Image (cartoon, rainbow, N blue to C red; front, side, top):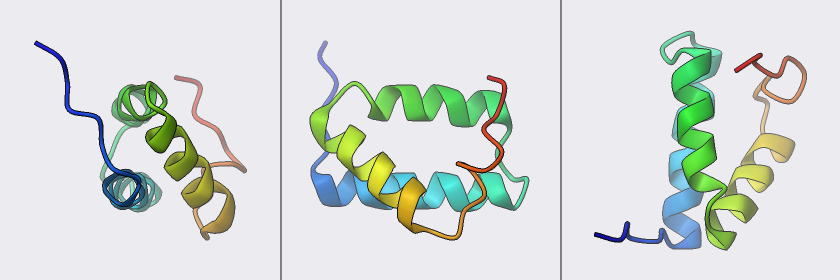
Length: 67
């Protein structure tokens, strides 16, 4: 069964939620890596992830997880 491709807005929301949870140590590096990998499988997901990670106050791009 194929996964539903997220809209850009859905992907933005997910990326924002996951980055915020990771910043608060509510999400492990491994789980974040898995979720980001899923987002990067689609064009909307890729665009949304980089839009959030590069424009937000998240420390993600400053301390990229080893995972």
